[in-house]
Amino acid sequence: MKFAIIAAGEGSRLAQEGVELPKPLVRLHGEPMIQRLLRIFFECGAEEVAIIVNRLHPQTEAFIRQLMSEHPEWPIALEVKTTPSSMHSFFELSKHLNGAPFCLTTVDTIFREQDFKAYIEAFHKALADGYDGCMAVTDYIDDEKPLYIGTDAEMNIDGFYDQREERFKFISGGIYALSPKAIDTLNRCMEEGQSRMRNFQRGLVADGLRLKAHLFTKILDVDHASDIQKAEDFLAS
Image 1: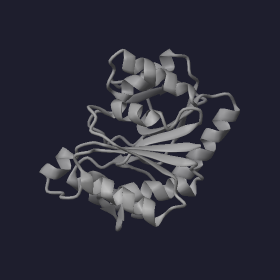
Image 2: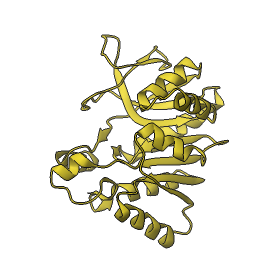
Image 3: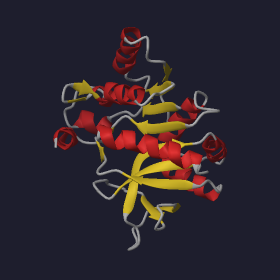
Image 4: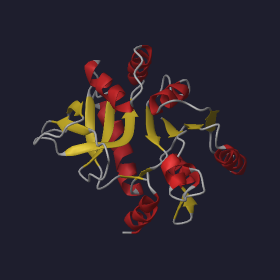
């Protein structure tokens, strides 16, 4: 199984709020977010981790290349490119993911390690049961523009929605574990000029992929300076 990290954002909101480091290098309990993800992914048996970083932040590229030198046992495929959207970043990473199940997330997605390891186990079970993917969901809503997820009683996903309805209990956690079939959907979305990851998720349903929702206790995003302390408190709790 392969893993992928989108770390190509500009991090403009953090910079405007006085955070000097690029977002991937922001530390949580002393550990840069990008390094934390890599450590967890390789602990979960990652065959390879593909990462895309923004060319405008050479400090991030230099840090990852240093990690690659210090940890030759970590197979890392690094892409350095400035992209217009997360879906474009995903597309740049997709050449490293074809042919294998994979897990994709953004660099600022914060979760408990035990939750993530249980999620990867659930994904392998879902694949064995004939599913095409397992999407991380949470009932903790602290997102400026949450993506609501429709599920049945067995946690099968029937859709992704911008507006909340009474039956929606969960929102997307921004972690996607998918079979290689998902790359076909990505390519179609790119050909149609789509640019948002939520439209990719809708495309998975439209293309008939069977998706399971997996509940995390909580998932946070680090979008603002205040989120750093919030994330540290969450991980320490």
